[in-house]
Length: 273
Image 1: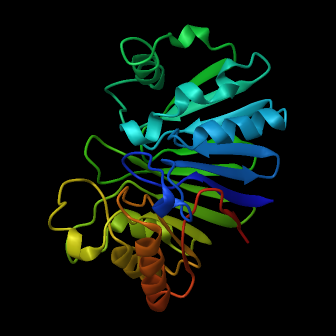
Image 2: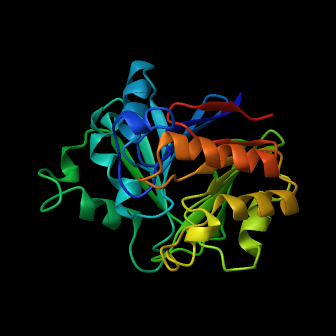
């Protein structure tokens, strides 16, 4: 089984309320299952529910990869209950701060005072920290290949392409595209991918106003997916102000341009291949 589940799909900050029920309000957390292996990507607010699900299944080991450490991608980590379970091994991976800060330093900095009331030492799970340089190919589990890429985002960011049993999933966020240019790194990541998850925080008409914020648009996602021969496109990292009705319109317009498109929703599960 090669499967992706979306525990959090919203960017910037969690949101709630009647206008955000259909697509959800949790910030980024994606679970990838490669047979018996569980990989998580980012620790936004959605990771709280992912952790509860894993505890309910008595999962003994999980790999957690960070794209980067902006608040929306790390805010849920202290509430990820498997890190407090002595029967669990958690492998934590990062590379966006390569040469500047290790994974262990990064996590100890934000799980502890003054940002959090207790220190990481309270965690009873076996925590294993892994550092890598963007561009390296990782093999976190037998048969699972994770290719890493440096993305255009303030402070650095890592994109991941997961390959298992001849199938591929590309996670292309957070990334900002240049006007009129198809990002070569994104194209490489998305080439012939079975599923692509792409940063679609904005619509193209908003890009000039938010230049430098580090995000892209659904229109750019479609152009890249066509050029790369991607099979399915998932719009991700929805702007916190984007209501269900606005998201439904974006999803419909994107499907008219690239039929195999869907906007990510909290709790959504896709089989790959």
